[in-house]
Length: 113
Image (cartoon, rainbow, N blue to C red; front, side, top):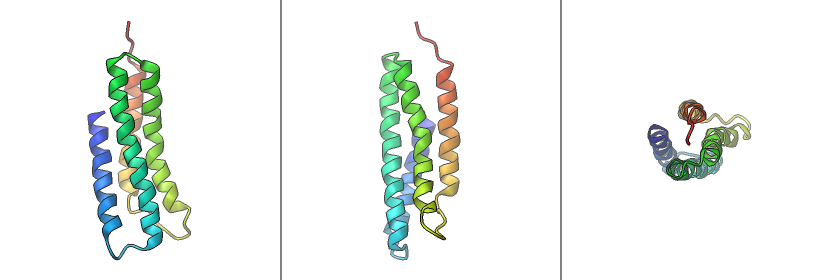
């Protein structure tokens, strides 16, 4: 989960840099704003997932980790909904989806008494 959080932080840094770039169009910046909101939600859910682990709430943990899989898709959707717009975060979002899926898979193997 720490590695996934780190990738969300990296994605946030890249999206922020692109968002501040004066050569980025308004449409790109709107899509990047969606990405930044999604990445922030992902990091927040991971923090809540740590609390779920400490309280042995496997149901909540699974729900939160499942949600982290959706955030990179939301980012990609923001770009794909604009004709001809290609996501500059495509590779970063692929990494996020892969790592989030791994985290969810690991969580399903947890069994607490």
